[in-house]
Length: 333
Length: 120
Image (cartoon, rainbow over all chains, first blue to last red; front, side, top):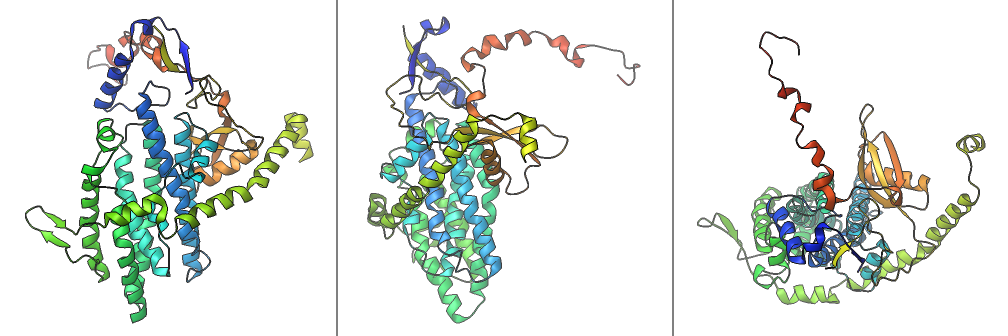
């Protein structure tokens, strides 16, 4: 794909192996890989898969929350939620741009989402039933995402790392606003407290699943660690998350729905129960509560936006036909 | 020996039509890609912020505002269509930048002066 045969004097006596060696040396020495550098085709494909999946997650992630913008309980909450959802759109765009530097087009990337070829984070296939879910998403879902994204600010591919730095800077308000929503509910009426606990109960396990399968079952992990695309394993990140949340939940005066959750003085970590992997794989395969609905919503938005894209393109074409000088342009304003 | 090398004509975005088996199914509605440069405050240079798609320059600037300056990160925006950016070749970096390597006399620390000399 996108390959041409070029003859370079220097490269005439260099083989694929030499290129790989130089590449791996850069990785080992913490030198970032930039779009124009040579990279193994598998590294490129691996990144296209991961970064586009990440981008799709940001975009699909707007749906369960966008659903609550008009129903948020106050003008303040509406404004905050709107800003958050707008951030997610921006994050999707940073990541789509990073994907494009790997040699794929925006159209193709979006087609892959719509055709079901590309995945997005399964967490967004769960429904947001009450206002407390918006709090739980901010606290748990964004909390889990942030752990992953902080790690990715140090990923080996330059454009991906830069997008992550920007995203992390913006994302921390997302988690704080979520926790604050739950904090307010946790101090409210009995009904509000119950709503708070119910949302935590429903979002806890899916949040743990966000870190992916166990290291022993993860197909892409080994290579990704060697290439420093990932720098911490799924289980390592998941443990960090549990340790963090198990403490924070105490501030809310709520509990996590896991009878096996217990501080382990030997490991200095929380022990926790086993994830329902059957549910995990089932949702990944497309059978979650909202898979169908999410994809349909994306496709509908894409199709209904077609006339806008067409009109803008036509307008741009029309203006190209009659080029104006700067002076003329100013006079006509 | 032929080595397969991806060829980039400009910036960080690979040229889609530089060979290979990809049949571009570009339609009229595919907006071109733009590179965005932002001046974060008066007195500083514009710095590359990222890229985005837009039908024309005005839309590119408005989209750049929404994508890259939601938290007052900028006071001025430049956009340029990505295809107009030309870049040096990283594969030639060693020889390309070599002339600067052995010229330590370009740095002030190269010169040994007595301590009595002040303000220099």
